[in-house]
Image 1 (cartoon, rainbow, N blue to C red):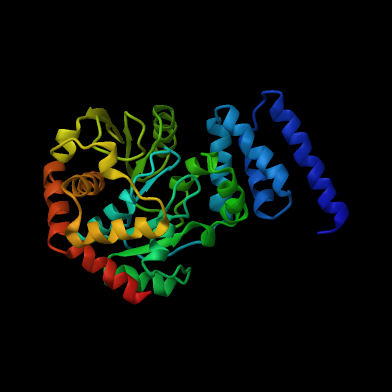
Image 2 (tube, rainbow, N blue to C red; image 1 turned 60 degrees about the horizontal axis):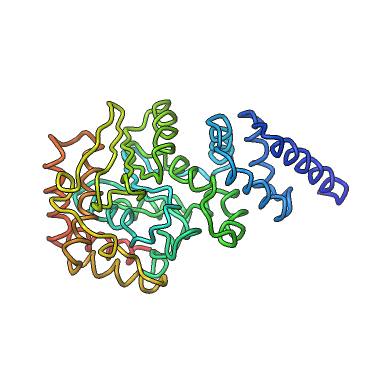
Length: 342
């Protein structure tokens, strides 16, 4: 790309920003083109930061979100996991709650129950430790090699897909997101762009508005999904209060007692002050040495994910499978096998 060419694209971004500053919105195609250009390095960091900031000041439209999603999936490195019907548990992040790595732990509990999991994750942009941070601390090596990922899936029932290695746009904005340290529309995109195209998905969202948007978008696909939002603001089943649960078939509000047999406090699910501390909490829980509150939360999220597959009679059966996976050591064995295979 010549200097003249870069300047031309720079001016294009300026026009886009001025357009957006007038409270106008992008079409689906325009949104897609912008994210493709970001992936290709055609805008500078200041322009990208300004573009991201627009969506901190106003609600993103469904067309804009769909355009961004299409760009990410079109540019993504494809993952072929054979004939496995894989599951993912993922939250949008950005809830500002700094919980321990509930979704990632729940994935290992699901794997310990005999189900295949393709966990899509990233470094924490608004939290101390994202799923990639904790996996790295545990000794997992990120990779894109299809054969190795399939081997991990066969041996341990789980593989991990570090988002920036599969999505050029996420890699391009990683530093900017970390420096901003606030929730952006990329938080919204993460759960929708798992390159393994999971058959089942448990998605945690930080607001009822996001739950509505996700419900609309996921209804357009073939994924069996469950969307969860704790009404006190968590993007997962926190057991600190009631949870909104939305599936392909409808929606309901479920109590902490119904989901986890008990209610817990915010302090019970605190995630620590560093990636190292988060990893230590993770190891303690997966070894079966967590507090009753920590265990209850990860079991509830794993149970809801298992319930999403439609393979089991009801949520109670799924809950007991999750309890067995954690307490028998099957979930921990999956972790050990995965780390050894990586």
